[in-house]
Length: 177
Image 1 (cartoon, rainbow, N blue to C red):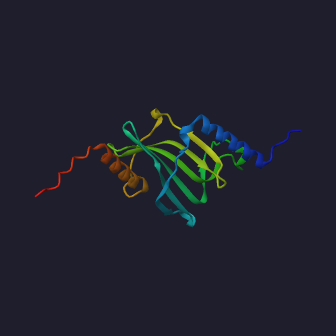
Image 2 (tube, rainbow, N blue to C red; image 1 turned 30 degrees about the horizontal axis):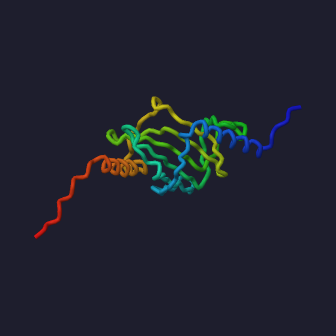
């Protein structure tokens, strides 16, 4: 007779596997975290989503500015065609419910484009449901849509980056009379 593990054992196993994945693929988690609220949106059905930026993660990497964002949803979100680490934990195996989405982004300030480089989804309990990192050759850059949270982040990051890159002109000495 075949025995199955209780759901709590699956959750524990899921967290162990996710923790192992984060050790093997450390790029999927931002360790320094100072989350700043950038935007909030009212979603269908009356739930809200809050979009944050980890200001400690903003750094220049080659021709890109890299940073982490986080979207927190007041209601569980679904993903169709899910291929998470525990498909049997979900009733259909193809839909998952998540509350938090962490995304690492590369911004090309010169071209005004961005690409997702790493992403993870968390359950309401904080368990990591899925996490992945893309190779640089798999990054797909898109243009910013004016007025969106990502467009505001682009403006803030690229303006800040440009100011750091430009040498400051020396100030004029004070007049002496």
